[in-house]
Image 1 (cartoon, rainbow, N blue to C red):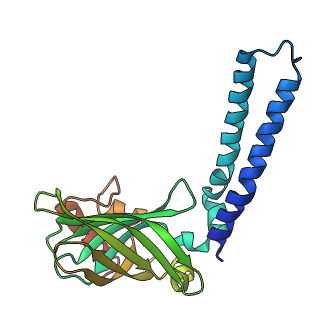
Image 2 (cartoon, helix red, strand yellow):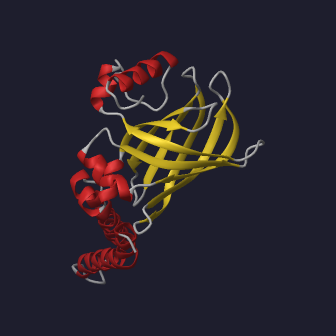
Amino acid sequence: MNLVETFRRIYEFGWVAVASAISSAVFNKWSSSVSAADYTYTQMAIHGGGSFLIWLVLLTVPFWFINVPGIRHWLYPHSVIEGWWLQKVDIQERPWSLSHLTKNIGFGWDYSGYAYDAAGRVAATWSSADTKLDDHAGFWIFKGESHRLNSSGAPTRTGNVLSVLYSKQYCEAIENDPSAHLPGRITDLDYEDLPTAASITLVRVTSEDWQAANISHPSTRLRPDQFARLIEQMRRSGKIQ
């Protein structure tokens, strides 16, 4: 069992019980401070509402804890691959993608982005969440929904997307060298055409790359001229050929 799953189970089977016990003790303390004869329904509602709020706050404490970047990286070394990525995709119609991998408010991560055609126009989009982190095999699996886009950028067909990032073997290299590549594979399912499977290579897009490309607001969806500038910057920096 990996650290993510261990932390999740401790939360579900331990911390929830602790939070419930604390909030119940607070309610009992408040209610015992008033004699039974003087205890009104209004006071009971106030005490109950207050203890419920305490319970909710306590439930969120672990989320605050794991969302501190330094603590998260210590707990989950694979979080080093969070951030912006330019992806080289082995699909002729959509040879490039821009993706963003980020921590969500729960215990998982979100992986989303846009695919681009050779002219730099958006051709597809996807949004997914991690479903499995296999530390032994080194697979980080994401599952979600994808959309093909028409020439105006509007979604047309919807499908399911499965992405696999080979995180474990490359985390240390990426941490030591921002230009290190991260390999993976994607599969698009449930379209009217045949399922699409392809290999991908992720290359880190740093804040310096965005600035050099004159893009003030990083995004996975860029205009063709912005995308062209980013590609040119990545080539000048030697990150892609």
